[in-house]
Amino acid sequence: MKNIKNFTLAMATISTLFLSGCSSDDDFSTTEEEPIENTQLSGSLQSDRILIASEQYTLTGPYLVKAGAKLTIPAGTTIISQVGTDRYIAVEQGGKIDIQGTSSNPVVMRSANNNTGDWGGLLLCGKATTTEGINVTGEVGGLIYGGNDDADNSGSIKYLIIRGAGAQINSESQYNGLTLYAVGSGTQIENVAVIDGADDGIEFFGGTVSATNLYFENNEDDSVDWTEGWSGTITNTYILNNGSSFSTAIEGDGDNNNPSFVNLTAVNTSSPGSGIAFQFKKESGGTFTNIQLTGYGTNVDMKDDGPLQNIVVNGTPLSTPEDEVFNGTPVDISGWDWIHN
Image (cartoon, rainbow, N blue to C red; front, side, top):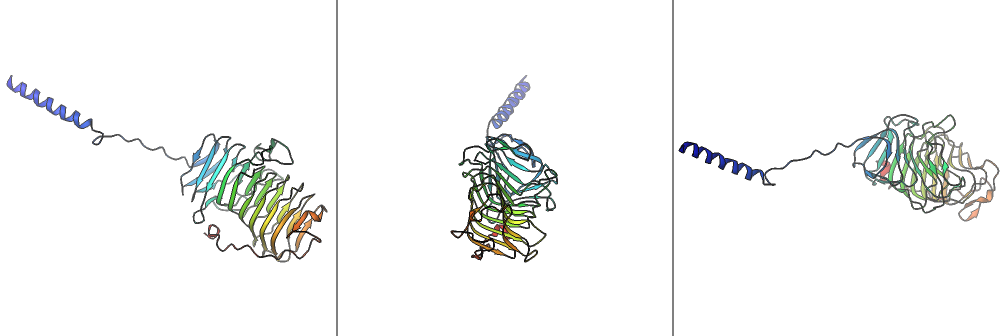
């Protein structure tokens, strides 16, 4: 009987010590596994999402940032698109994008092999004015754009490189590297490069957005294109054509809402003495300050015989298409590390 009591007492003591040890948060804890990041981008983004800095993502289909959602892309992030006509990133009306690249660590969007025309690029849809009206249907995926809010904000794009865009949309149209549908002046765009595109580097469809520090290299159509009454300003633009043939460095089309270019350098070394630097269609024009054009056969082409006085260079309306006013100071890109890197 005594042995049984001693055994029972010993077991009770052990149990008490065990339970006492388990009750301490310092000595015993459980951990939950963190969810694995989905690096495949496609479908609709309905709420805010922050990608992982310096991570590599694969674009497998249209990726649509819906109204009320914001896509944040930190510095150093790479998005590699599969080859295809429906591979693009689009920010719909009311959605936002926040690209947070830096000079030493830009955000890169490209295809796997960097070939020209592999994918569809980046598209933003805003609520600013366009000569096409309100709630216009774009040629890509039925995207809607246009309104009456010229201060509309689609987010911020800083230090972004886009390569190899320009896939076919249909038999007559191709994607641009960066497409801006009625994007408002509340949107920030600075330090963007578009390289090796099969169509335009950047195209504005109306809107009031401005941009700073743009670099374009070997885009096969126009490096900068606008239509539908875009009225913003681009400051510091460098255009280089040193590879295959191209259409123009700059093309304006449609009504003239007088966009502005301050400090623009365009260089043609692919076929010196040929090609068109600036082409204006219909009534289009603009105001240009400090422009340098090198290596083009034609400086200004008024394709539809529009009013030459709609083109103002260094404060004076152009008097002849080949007026010698395009010999300004070149844009210095030696400090644009995000391109050289």
